[in-house]
Image (cartoon, rainbow, N blue to C red; front, side):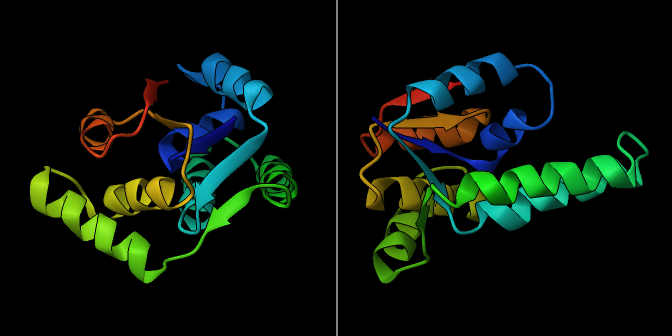
Length: 137
């Protein structure tokens, strides 16, 4: 099963918070993990924020980043293709979304994800409208 994670969901794989257990379960069930190309900078940005806020130290930051980089070696990473951008624009025109959230939806459609995992309500609603099977974490 190809499981696509948006950044808000996949970061829970590394940072313990509400939804972490569900993300780990979905990762275990996945035969392939799908991510948008924008996920890596978004997740590293979250790690940097945690470090700035003093919630993690430099060593923990490096460990989290290393784990993420190792995990994405086997992931299906969707580039920003014309098809992804077209789907993203359609999602923006028909839903209340941020641009990056629309790119995740476009990426999931392009990768033909079996399930789309997100923690964002507006994004989940828009993903359902595109025909994606959506799960909340």
